Image (cartoon, rainbow, N blue to C red):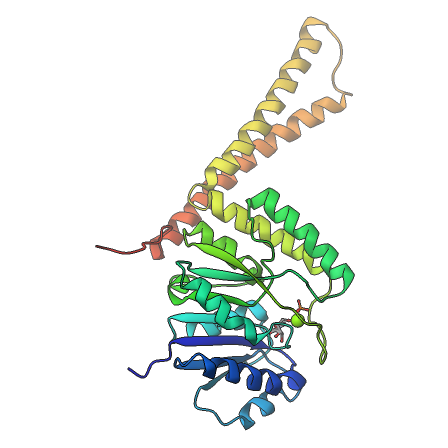
Length: 309
Ligand code: UDP
Ligand code: MG
């Protein structure tokens, strides 16, 4: 069979200065493994000479996917994964911050029975502010989703191809791939990897991305817990809200009819009405979400089969 065994997927957006050096270094490492490999660069709508640099490289092992415009790193990774032929897929950044020399170690750890081995940049070479926000993000990830992976944002990871059957990545979900995979029941491990300062080109993300990351995390958490039963979340909120409104309402009735005092000028009255209306809204929303989920799961399943014996 002439199919490659290892596919390396590299999203690149305006990385003209880095691509060739990375390609050279990476090819040397991959050759030393003595396995058939392919290198997939995804040019994510670069506006610089990245694509020209890529086209100049003459190598049968090189595949270039060219996006029409910039669709983002997650989309680029997704396209790369979907076009990979190898049973083992490595993802890495194009900016030389990840080190190809770590790939053999990632693969040997993967072979110890993992489905995904995630790189951990334990000596991360980024600005202090970025590291600070990442640290915060890690705590939130741990608290909300019980995700114990130290460095989920590191692109350098090794996967088995089967991780991506029935999985489409969208938005900025690439930072939560280990979490998503472990939710699906895949075995995820970690390995300390090197990290270098970016020497050429610019980072595409400011430190404020952590806020968007937080919202994405909420989506993952919601998906993980309630994707098959949204009514439990919305219905629960609805009942809590409606019941509180009702209790306050009863209290106001007591004041009006037993204590014989006026309640028209009491802010509590407004709160009570608000809570009851909100409660009804939440429950209705839960029903709608349930209908949508039913439609969604007609096309796919919420479980993932390991093997059939
Ligand atoms: N990238 C991409 N599309 C984008 C943004 C980034 O393909 O819209 C690529 C980028 O070229 C790099 C990797 O994703 O190879 C990581 O981006 P960057 O180095 O800017 O992130 P940082 O290391 O600063 O977190
Ligand atoms: Mg980088």
